[in-house]
Amino acid sequence: MRYNKKALDGAVAYYKKELSNELGKKSAVLIELQLKNSRAFFSLAPLSRAIHELGADANVFVLDGKSEMLGTLRRTWALFQKREQGADTKTLGAFIGSVQKKTKSKQFAKIFEAPNLELTASPKGFKGKGILLQYQTKWFKKFMWSQLNQTAKRILTQGYGIKKSERMSIGFELLPKKKDLELPLQDYLDSFSIAYSFALQAKRMCKKVAMGADTARMSQLEAMDRISDLSATISGCEYEKKISEPWFEEFKKLSPIIGAGKLKLSDASFAVHGKGYGGKHFFGLRIGYPTPNKKSRWQSPGQMFLKPWWLDQTKIDSRPAKRRHAITETLPIENYVRTCNIDYYEMRKRDDEIRNILKKCKKLYVKGKKVKGGQTNLVLDMTHILEKKSPVLASDIEVNPSTPGEASSIFKVKAGRYGNFPGGEVFLTPHKMDGVFVGDVVIAIDQSYIIGHNNPLVVRVKNGHYKIVSGPKKILNAFNKRKKEARNIISQLERHKSVPAKIIQTYKRNFDRVGEFAVNTNPKARLSRYLIETEKLARMMHIALGSGYEPGRETLYHCDIVLNNPRQKMNIWGTDLKGKEHWIIKNGKFVV
Image 1 (cartoon, rainbow, N blue to C red):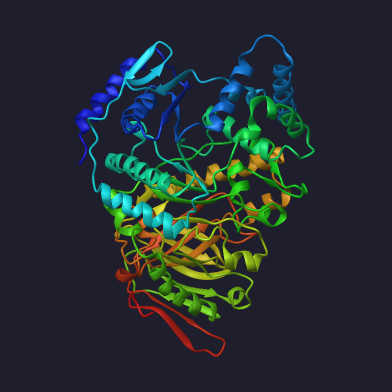
Image 2: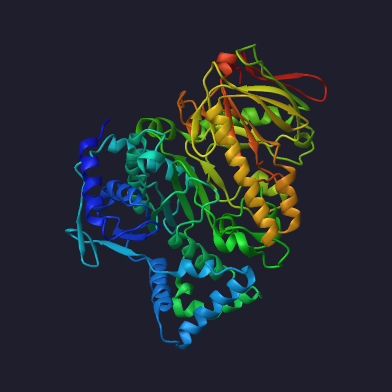
């Protein structure tokens, strides 16, 4: 490993010893530091692991100046802790009471409890009430730093088209407990460098930058950490405070007291994701955020601000998207630099060739040679593409511009853009698909899992609905857990009526459908254990089970499976209305 693990373990032990009397299970720790303080930032790796090993949650604010949200949170906590019943505390109580009356739960009030410990970076270390934690950075050393900066600049310039007037937020991964770390430790440590170099580059190119991180959940059914839950509630209710529902009317009175009106949303965001989930958002799950006409509801502020083109709520909500967003995984630095520091406009040329072929085909055929486990043999009906009812999309210049042109035009929506880095795929949502496919590279569930050649994932598809025939036990268990938890969340949304019945039916109808078919095009991607890279590897392809990228095709999971086209000697071609063949891949190699 390129980092000093002995020093890292020593730093974790130091922080655990210093914090053992301060924290108990389910404690909440708020950590605040300035972006320019690199020693504080890289100390977060051992500090966050120590907090997690003690059973507590961490929530980190990395600031370039002041944070409007942090100020609002502190005013809210102070108000909640007051014992005397002044006018301001009554206003907060009325808001909390309106939500608890609606949800028939006292759980909502718990997210207003102040952190058990606040740590603020100082010249000497992290200072808290009666505690000083020295910075621990001996584990860290810079690696490929100039290449990281170049990559960040390329992504921000071509991938985002970032403007000097814009605000940007960057999310990063904290270090989990040892037992929750299935991917290499080095990948998580690398992600600190990736996120930090990205933030420093963004600071040079836009108006303001902020970074944030919080404790990941290992189950979709776990509640968010309470600081994140309160932050989401405040930002969502502030955006909705003109809606005529009791809880929003009460929040409108509370807003000037806690300074929520001063909150400013980021125009663009970038996030590094590791294993796990964000957790359940109480207000979104139990009440939801209505569209102005009240004909639909959003499940989270993130959805509402992004307004993805594929969600039914997007067309119903007349407000413009407020943000564009892209993600990456906890990739090794080498993989990230190699696959993301590329000419995105050049990659688009091949993507457009593939898109043009797919747009004129009535049928698409995918056929490989027999391999252990079965043979890939699929037929896709492309009528919905021919009739221009559905787009063929590309992941190349990602979230630049901020609105998806073709999807917005076809679906007549004011949508925001969402993408991946690395990019490199041409994809569509299948309507009618039949046959069998053999997944033999990697699958994304709650993280990326390698699929061995000798025990592939074999999936049968009939009229767009899938059934897994066979696969590795560990992967099947993780996949079934993901689906079980998704069903549970759908049941909760239905019970609380926090989204319309029509959307609930959509979730159920699409639960066992194939949601995506894609041809990969990134020329620098290589075979690896990381889904976000391998699903972009030129010549390969991937198919996703679950949610699709069109209105009416949403459900609550999306699991990508990569197929090794060169190994399976895959042929991908289509036929147009006159029966003429148009080839994309022949014997596992591009012919476009």
